Amino acid sequence: MRLCVDNRVYLNQVSPTGASGFQVVDDMRVTSNIAIRDSDSVNAFEIFARGEDSRVYARNLFVIGSTWKPLDGVSATSDIAVTSRALYVRGGDNAVYANPQNNGNGTFTGFQRVEGSVTGNPAAFTLQPNGGPLTQYPLARQPNAQLAFNIRPDNGAPTGPFTGYTPVPTAQTSHDPPAPATRQQPGDVRLVRVRRPEPRTGGSRPETGQQYSVRWWVDGHWRRYHCGPGRERVERCWIGPYLAGRTASPSAASRGCGCGTGSGIGTGEVGCGWRTSPDR
Image (cartoon, rainbow, N blue to C red; front, side, top):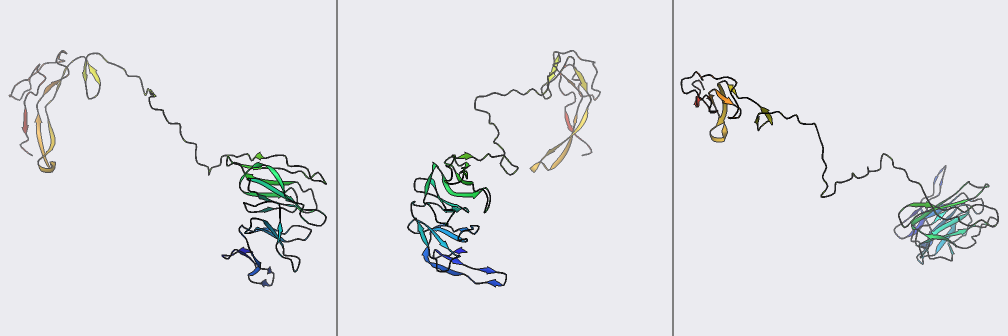
């Protein structure tokens, strides 16, 4: 069964020995997907569709010579849902309309409005298949986009009324996106204490935040540095002994630099100046 580009219904009958090939089912053009019922004990195997005039049509494929028959009473605005004992369609007022089937001869008794607004195409099923209790369960999407179901209990003849729509509970799965993180509002201040600082008295080194109470001598040493175009040339320079720490702090010891170019004691400056390495 399929709906072709000319909006007519085509049927392909399949059997254990092969298939008949697609053949057009009358000349009526439809404007919805096709609903199929093949589990009805009375006049089994029917198809349903919405016609170009927005009426619901039924076509019996079991009885030879049958044609499309309209089921009047509602202007359909959706696809059709069908169970073994009723069909459902959304009307122009966005309510679902149910058309129960007579248990005796299989005819439909007329459309009945199910209270409540819905969106989208309805769906439906029965509690049990043929021969058992036939409580009806239509489902539809609510205006808030939540799926809900309705119940029409099978209380014998006549069938009981619908009980009203009940939202279908939802549960978050691993495929659902995670909830968005709470963002800090502008103007809010968040204080994070990593560890408590331990202040020291005396002098300080700005690059580390450490504090010292005395000055100390730094021995002379060579230092490599990059210079020239693109800083590609490497030079070595001599850094003479010098006093480190704050000038106001007392020296741990006093000594000459030993290089003959000036002691620099108590000045905190480079004692020997800068000079390039003789073996660079």
